[in-house]
Length: 202
Image (cartoon, rainbow, N blue to C red):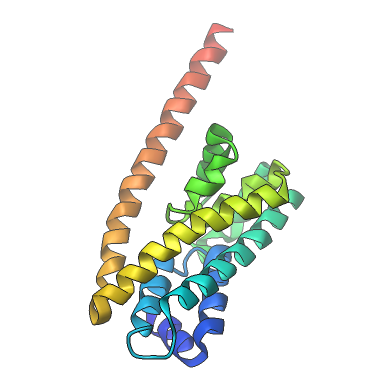
């Protein structure tokens, strides 16, 4: 998949970056930790610029986020989990991932959209509970732009700085993602235990 992504980006430039990042938001198996650093690397041997790559990536991220936001407005958590349970293997998304994104949103409110943009996988799925909660779309777009801009700027800049060694970013992001998933898992466990205790006391 990585070769196909990089070939597409080299062929179509900014449009390719926009398209790939939009897909990455809708289909999490397409990794931003490949697209963004490679986009930064492309600025070292093509006419692309770092600000241009960041702008294209941010626009693509918001476009993809709006698609998932729209899906969230149409579906309930239970219905979406049933869909993911049936088709999620193809997308490499599990019902638990939907539950994590939903818990993150309801635990941290609208700011989950901002901070969620800087967490792998959650950065895509957080748009769904925002849509389900019918979050104000103007606020959703604004927070999505801010959070995405920070993430994109960091990864594109690192890719440009590392040059041909841009691929090392994926390894670091992979370790970062594992730590974040463990933390989210612990939060879900603690929340489940508290809910269970409250029901026992009532």
